[in-house]
Amino acid sequence: MTSPPDLSTLSHAEKDTLILALFARLAVADERIAAQDARILALEARLNELTRPPKTPDNSSKPPSQGQKQDCPSPAARLARKSRPGVGRTLHPNPDKRIDAVLPACPKCNAAFPEALQTPQQVYERIELPPVRPHVTQVRLFGGRCACCGERVTADAPAGLGRGSPFGPSIAAMVVYLHYAHAIGMERLALLMDELFSLSISEGAISNILARARQPLLAARTAIQAVVLASPVVCSDETSARVTGKTWWEWVFVGALAVLHTIQPSRGKAVVTALFGDARPGVWVSDMLGSQRTFCAMRLTPSSVAIPRSARRSGNSCCAPSPSDDGERC
Image (cartoon, rainbow, N blue to C red; front, side, top):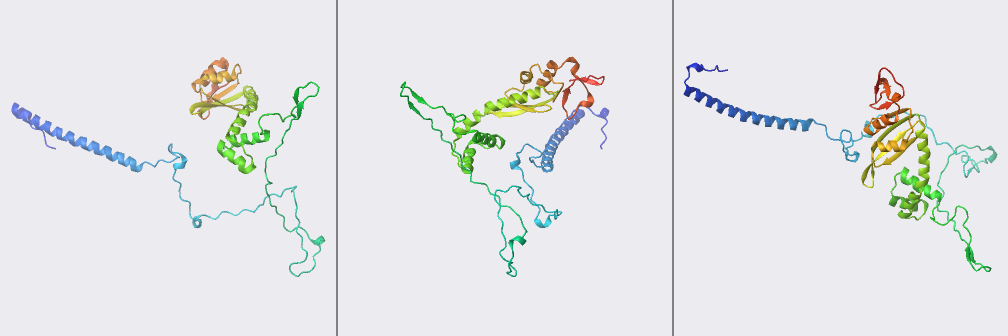
């Protein structure tokens, strides 16, 4: 490194010249440093791009359909599976039909082979579905004009066969089950009913069946709600759900004997307070969202909001009637 000059021996003009030279060198150095910084940033970005793992459904929000599946190993490279004792399908205890094939003679020597000496050597089954077609009951209500009073009268319909939808409870149960349990849409469900059951049904009729199924399901929901409200322990959580193109919230309340699901447009405490009313579970477990925290403060007694730290699990919080010196408020 060059030692600095003795400034005491320099005149003012020489000092000015030295300062200007240093300023020029600093400007060049600044430009070089700026270029090097830009180059370093570009190289770091490139390095990050090369070393960063590719986005997959496992480490990003990419849908599973866009994931690249690994090639399966060739059959020769696979390890042989350890053998297990073979098992067969259990024979039906009461088959609808049994066919016995007996030998008229020995196939080896053609000697007579009495049927009484033969025993079953192999027993297997062939299972088929019977033809499925709708069972149509046509109701005819007779009547006419009364010869006495002159009024036109009609007979009453038999019980359970009144006017209305032509599709009975068995068809309604099948439609509800396939639509909700197996997520089959209206168009495919109408096609499926036609191809499997030879039943011609429109999408509008399916929609009406699903609408009529609401009332019995509401009665079942009321029974489930009563069981959950009476539970000493309630676990609660909520997640988003799309309803007619808008974001609603699916709430779940898990009791000791039942689980209640309800979809509401709100995520606030009004949902919890409207559902539980004056009911107060002994223990309330949740992620302590603001709405649920407010419910704890409003609904549980002052002695019910202390819980030992050892009761915390998996990031959830709960309020329970077990005050302790090492407890903490919800």
